[in-house]
Image 1 (cartoon, rainbow, N blue to C red):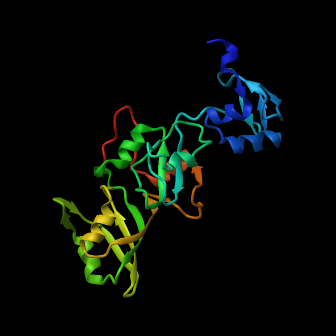
Image 2: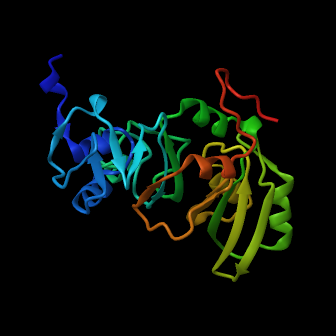
Image 3: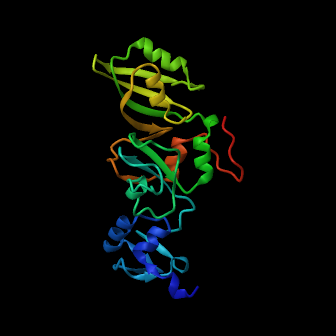
Length: 252
């Protein structure tokens, strides 16, 4: 490959190296906060070869991130897949300026919204989805009909549906009426459609479902359809039991 073939805009270089999203990179450069080989560059379209330059942001040398992890607030109506033969919207339609080829950690179905993790770190993804890791996932659930304390207790004791054992370690009724009930449900295994199957089994079909927490990561005020990068410090705090290594970490 010729040298000119690897030339990209500085804006794209910051994104490609995992230093900022495209929109963040544009703002950083326009504000005079980015230097290339010691010289401040104000033009986001300035052409560079990412592998052959030294980039500083606010005077601090930056290296390419070895991994890239983010959380997305997935809205309802988006598939957790890279593409759909029927042309339906996918979560990747919301990740247009993500500077790496990330994969989702597990899935949220079409009608479920909330926190979805994406990463380039396959070891982390495998550990987070391994049932032995017992990572809690917290959901806000709206269902048809009045859910009683006895029914909530049934969810925590567990049931068998279609030959599979399902259980919610924690299930709390926040509000209940004849028409509908609102619950907080925590899972630890991430089985396919587990909340929906649990609630259907006890006679209360789900009408709304949103995941608000995954381990120590919370959705907080992240707007639907938006994403943000997770720092290494955030990941260590959110999943303190995770120990990256040359071998897949063994859950406790």
